[in-house]
Image 1 (tube, rainbow, N blue to C red):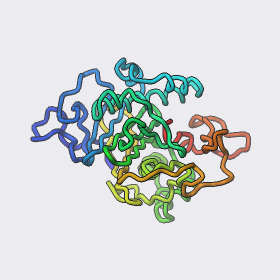
Image 2 (cartoon, rainbow, N blue to C red; image 1 turned 30 degrees about the horizontal axis):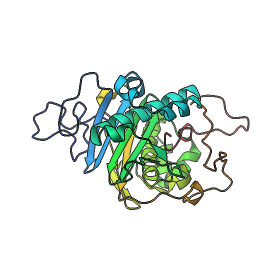
Image 3 (tube, one colour; image 1 turned 120 degrees about the vertical axis):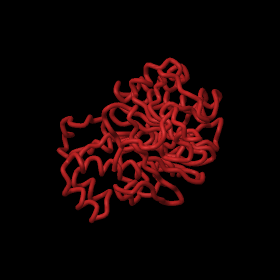
Length: 310
């Protein structure tokens, strides 16, 4: 369960660009092996499979990068203005990082074009419908992924101790019991590894939380696996992302239309709260450690984050 990258770094004499065809980050390389500028906000870049590229960065670095912010569209700024300030910053950082990645692997037309949600929420590029995209954020980190003629989902999660209910819902009984017996910090890391795989899979399938990510069985120790025609991978946490660590996973597979509405997603709950447009309401924007809702029921911090990062 080490989060330390072990493969060749930029500048290493490996005979090929670091990270190509592997889950090793090419932290200072662009696709094709070109060197990155020293002030590049991207902490690490992976090409874990043909057609799949993903990046991770600290949101604060992205939000101070003029090239990243310059590609944001007016509608993205308007959407952020309607959110809580911290949520708006996450939204802009995620979209800006996605546009940085699109500029590298798809070109400026896609990097500056609209990104719109499907009826059930999965982001798409109207100008490049065969391109899959995904964004995630947790704590100080944001991640983005692009798939060339592939559906893709990415999820990053700062470890937080799971509740008994979350373990029971998301893990088989033997795994739940094993995690429950661990010290809190180890259980938090192990569960984050489970949850990121589950989220990445349902994001790639276009269903998000209404798609019941707990249906995806992912042992916390395995490096990769399959689910519903998707392949999923766990990525090692890069040293360039800072002193903290987080779990990071991606899932990808052949394109498949998303549900026509959230109500069509597997695991849909008809009694779940809804926005006026019919999409599932996000969980309350309660920060980890904040007081419980008036109902007295704890809201898991793992559910506070939107499944599609807008």
